[in-house]
Each structure stands twice: as structure tokens, then as C-alpha cells.
Length: 606
Ligand code: M6R
Image (tube, rainbow, N blue to C red; front, side, top):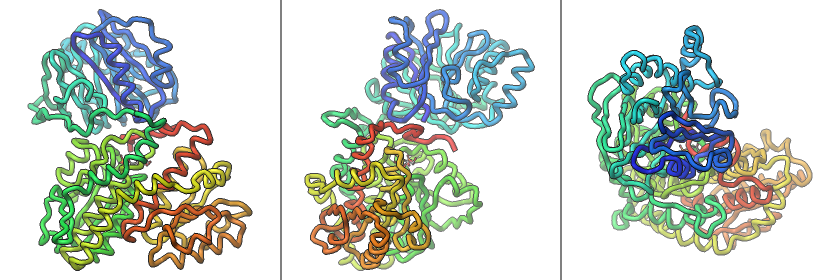
């Protein structure tokens, strides 16, 4: 989604801004721009990638103070005019903005009435003009931004440059901004990733914060004008360099990183002697867990799919009701919140606006939310204040892979922990621990011998649509496979619990239709076989993900086997071939695997 990078210090700003934008590229965007101050403020912006922006830049852009932006269109089409930065009417103020200004229409109308000519269709541009109008009152940049934002309603991460002042003023409300403190220089970014090359000393702005930066100082305050409580912290080492190395794409690299990522996630969190999980960050002891009436899990996309697996594991092991919810629906349905219940917000980025809103809804109604989060220090991690970091390391491909696995691993450990406090025996706990500990090695074994992925790709790459089916714990895995193939190869995909297929989706099947079945050797396998027969009888071609040595292999046209593993952690194995099918199909179709069209890595608008 939109990204912001800014610099003030002794060095030339333009190369630093462009490098900052490059590091934000993985988030997904449709246009880019930079503004550098050198007496006046020079703005350059263009539809396309950072590389496209470079083609229109002069050979040198002098100036040691600047801001930059990658845009993912919300208000107004993808055009050069709508790209950021936006300039005020008299060129005294230039801004970049992430988020949505909800009363933009009203602000734009009032500006037009005052004779200000707006040059874009965006909500953001209005802010530049309003700040300039306020600047004319006392020529104080900080107060001008404060007064302007008090007139705005909505969300923002905003940075403003001023023609007549050597300062950057930035503010946050619902859209992340992080200040990086260097030696005699300051950086500002919407993503910790872009800061790691420069400094580890950071300040995560909180909602309602306003910061005024010079090369050597940061002045923090609140939008209301009071003192901010926000403190400086050290950037986690997990946000270190993540380059492609020998891999052609981040998605493939991240698929291969899964064994180590899972090791990292489970290490030190399994109590073999007690047959339980040991998730200290949850801040819940066994007697708390024994009293939990029910569990709710919230997430979007891949995180929702992982939450569904968590729901099944919690019910199975702890025998308490659990329910996964799509975050974007949650607060609009006015849910009943029981303050004694446990709520989990599952998210890779920790910045997903829909999940943030769902958390706020629960907190407003007196409930507690625990994060299951990858990005350390992200908005959701801080808002929850308790939970489990999944420790996947940086995930840069838009299509989530290793974060899914680690979410499932983390939720398995939680299910085990709550299960042990209420229902299951130590022996059953130890069996699951053993299963989980085997997973990293088994994923490595599978990656070394992937089976006929190319044959599966040949069946799906030209298909009108692909049906993904699974039962029980494999139904969310099928959903995850469908999401992966759809988002990076642009093939319409449908995922259904296998038993539901005969109630509707079967109408889609014709001679040669590809159907992907996820069928590990568990208690619902026999039922899945019936669904396979029903599909075959209609001429469908079956791509079967199954366990090695299982006789179910005779049911498929293309059979991809994974090593056998404890039933409850089978998603950690069966999802891997689905990730590979999506990856290789996207490649075969010439799609941009890491940065699929229209998508963003973290979706920071509702
Ligand atoms: O950062 P989050 O986990 O909250 O993101 C949620 C979804 O936007 C994300 O999983 C999305 O569906 C991915 N592109 C899936 O690969």
C-alpha cells in the first residue's frame, strides 16, 4: 500500500529517497514521487515503478531535505497528477500522505470557494492547501500542521516540507510512521524495512502524535498540543537486510525459508516434559486458560485462513468453542463481546486497517485482544500489548507464504497450551509436540523432492477456473491454495469444503476442469475420496496433494505427495505444494510474482 520515506541531514537527499522507495517497493503501489528542497521545493512524480520515476528525473537534484512516496490509488485514478507529493497553491508546502481523509470533499469545496485551484482528484491534496492557509497565520510549520489536521477527519501518516523552513513536520493517526534517528540526520518511513540500512534507533509514532524534525532534533507533541508519551526504541534485528540472494523471486525464497522460520517460531516455546506449549507473551497462566469461555480469531486473507486452522485446533484440543472471523466484517456486525473470552488478531504486517478496527471494536466493548503478529513493534502488536510474535522474519513477496506457516505453528502451540490446561493428556500433548518438531525437517524433505508440480501447472495455467477442495483441517488449506493461485496468476479460483462441492460448485465441472484436492491421511479422507469420485465422473482432472505411501494416490491424475506427519499439523506440509503450484503457474503466465497487480503487501485502508 502507500509508502512514505523522508530525509533531513548533511547528505544529498534524492539518492537516499530513491533507495528508501526501492525498499518500500515490496508493499505494492502504482505511482511514485519525490520532493527535494533546495531554496524552492522540486517535485517529480510519475505513474509506475521507482524505475519509471528514475527515467524522468534530472541527472542531479541538489538538496539535503526531502520526502518521497509510493501511492496505491484510493481517491482518484492512477495518474501523474494524483501521485504524491502534492504541492500547495503557492508552493510553500509540499506533502506526502498515507490514509484516507474522510471529509476531503468538504475541505476541497471550501478551498474551491476560496479560489484555490486543485490539481488532482485526491483527498490528500486538500491537506497541502489547508496547511498553507494555516501557515499564513503565524508562519509556524508545526502549528500550521496541527491546526490543519484538526480540521481533517480520517486517517493519516503525513509528512510536510516547507519552502521557507528547514524542517519536516510529520503526524500519525491510523497510518504508521517511524522516525529513524541517525547522527546529525533524521529519516522518516512508513515501514521499518526502509530504515534498517541507516539506523537502529527509532521512534514509532503513536496515533495522535506530531513530530517536528531537524537534522539534529526531534520534537514530539500531540495533535492537541500536549506532551507526547512516545519513546525512542531499538529496531528489532529481524528487520535486517533481506535481499534475494540466489533466488529469482522473494516468494520462492520465502517458500524455501519455511523450515527455518518454523524452527524459529517453535524454538523455546514447547514444554516437552509437561506436553504443553509455553507462550509467555500471552501473559496467561493455566488457571486463566481453564476459565476461558470461548475464543475468537480475526484476520484477513491468508491470516484468516490461518485463523480458521487455529479455530479447528482450539476446539479439538481444548473443547471450547472457537470461531474465526473476517476482520473487515467484524465491527460492522455489532458483535457481542464477552470480556472473559480470548480474542486473537492474526496478522503478518500488524498494520491491516480492517484488523485494527476489529481490535478497537473489541477493546471498546471491554474485551482483551492478543496479537499473533509477525512485524515486531507494528501498530497491532503495540495496540494489543500482549500476544505471540510468529518470528517469520521479513516477508517481502505480496503473496504470504512463510507467515501463514508460522501463524499455524503459533496457533497450534496455543491450542496445545489451552488444551493441556483443560482437556488433553500429557501423552497427547507430547505426541503433538513431537509432530510439530518434525515439521521443519519434513518440509525440507519435501522441498528436496517436490513431485510433479510442472504437470499440475500444465493443467491449471490455461484453465477458465480452478476448484480447490479439502475437508476438516484441509478446508482452510484449500482456501489458502486458491488465494495464492488467484492473487499471483490471476486465475479465478474457488475453494470449498469437499463435502459442499456437490451442493453447487459441481455445476462448474466439465471435461478437463482441474480440481485440486488436499487429502492428508486423516479421519475425513474416506469422505474426500467420495468427492474425488464425483468430480472424476464429470470429467474433471484431479490434482491430489496426499501423504507419501497412501493408497489414495491411485485416485489422482497428478499426485503430489508430502511426507506423513501428525494429522493436526498436516497444513504445514500440504500448503507447500500449493504455494509452489501458484508460484510456477504465475511464472509460466509471465506474471509479476512478487508484486501482483492491484495488490499491496499491507492493506492500510478499510
Ligand atoms: O498483514 P496481514 O497478515 O494482516 O495481511 C492480511 C492480508 O492482506 C494478506 O494475507 C493477503 O491476503 C496476502 N496477499 C495473501 O497472500
